[in-house]
Image (cartoon, rainbow, N blue to C red; front, side, top):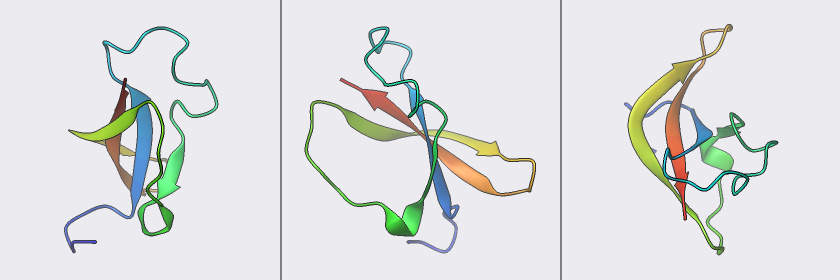
Amino acid sequence: MAADEPDYVVVRPHPDLPAGFLPPDLDGRWFDRSALRLGSGTAVAVPSGRFEVRDDGAVAEVYEVRP
């Protein structure tokens, strides 16, 4: 992890993602970047260039899920 990357990523659907594709429990879910593991599946999450800040001040890079 680069020093300038936030400690977290948050998952959001890409605007073109079909409705219902991303399970509701994943939309907005925060993940510790250091604990993420690569896997296989039918979708990919890519950095959006946006960031979110929680009430506690933690920062997450937004990753958008695309089919």
